[in-house]
Figure 1: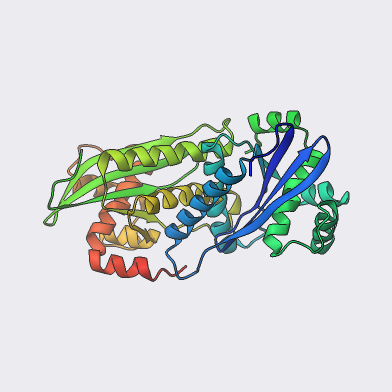
Figure 2: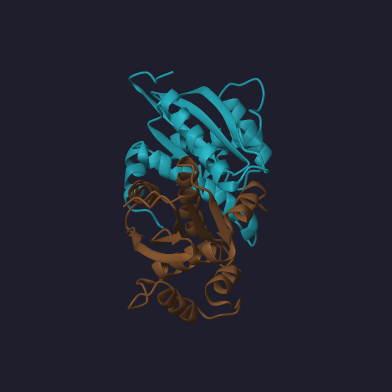
Length: 176
Length: 176
């Protein structure tokens, strides 16, 4: 499942404690090719630390199998709902540390940047983004579940709006 | 640095992206003994993922060196400040996953439970808690920095208020 020599392989991630979506794309000279997608599910009745450990192991397996060169993740934005933000942030922390441990640079993209990067419109709706993901990847149906489609959206956005050079600069000077 | 056969060794942790405090205690037949404390510091100009990876490596080294049997961490409570909660939650996620990977059960304690477990009073002030940590561990000075003293406080609380049996029950039926 290794990428071809001349292609740029991207791992897109939509993190969550119960459900982490992921998607893999290749970019060969501007042509985007779908490779795989899926979700990492953990059960609510399992201790939190074990759920996070399962996410860590699963991300390691995905990295080992697909050998992505770069990764894209949505930045966290939670208006007032801290309760739902905390488990997502915990999962995101685990995934970020695992990517860094494997030397894979991670690009954080705002929800609006992803919408614009996929559809061309910053204010696009969730369904519009998912339909564009389907069209760009030439898939018969919108990838399921939503978290996996969102992960593929982040990966497409990284290819569409961020050049490798800009990306490296960003990684060296993060805003936070 | 391994614990004696008949003692219960606890790792207390006060997580943070910039500064994670940790402390190690032994409990031999009801007698609490101080073993070590310290902090894991990461710089703000380093990419977030690399900082989280450094925390992951550091926790692994502490586990390897001190071989704790159990760990205690403060639950996250952030009134309205989501911005400061997110980096703490990311660090906490990494630490929790690392403990689970090493088979170390993690007990989450509320700030009030720690205050009560250390001083006997749920409404005790931060300085009171730190002074009690110093007295209980028979140290000449309050452990520095504050994060390390708070981590030792969580470890003392686990020994004082949570019996191993209660703790196991808690780990199997977490509230979230």
